[in-house]
Length: 283
Image (cartoon, rainbow, N blue to C red):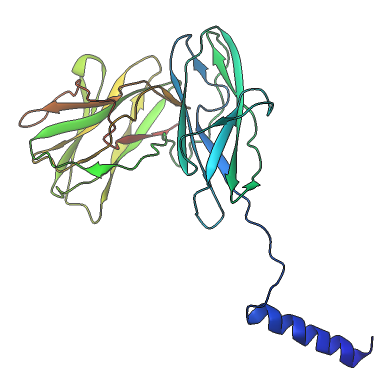
């Protein structure tokens, strides 16, 4: 081919690409992320554990569907959604359970996640975590504004699997955007920390605990906030099992509340609800 012919071919190729004629592009490949349980976490026999995560394309489009396998791909279980998904697993005997996830988009299957193992009814070392900038558990959800206008304290009950400190508490705001009181509670309603958060700049409050509050494994804590006029965000049927995202252990019915002026230690639950409260852990 002459130099002129080669130049003409380049011009044609560029023209076709720029002005919308068919050109070879990479097919979209959906990808998946597993949030709970962290690889190497432990559960008890009969404890329902929520396998949670999400599957999307690179530009943020939800996958058409996601699938879960417990036998390295011999069989697959279709999950409830292609974007944010969850699957309740209730082990019936001790041992290790290993699973993987994959997603589909327009007939194309994406890569399979690395295997994750849940240890059931056994003991052993803790899974490693990196919490330099704070760890929390993921609450994949679509919370709604609640029309409740009563004074109420809303929170989440949780434990940790290793010593550390709580550095922040995050939650979404509903219709009420005035000041709130953020609290951390220990066992039996012992108040460990309290601070007032002013009017937020947007729809999320991120309350910094300064200095961070020490926490220990084997203890139930509650992170909560008090709103004098309701106006919060919530979603029912979320905490239907345990979220096991190291270092957090969040059991079923973890979303708790308490009605009354001034708030108080929240212990009541409703339809496995979440109130979007997330504590952050650092070493």
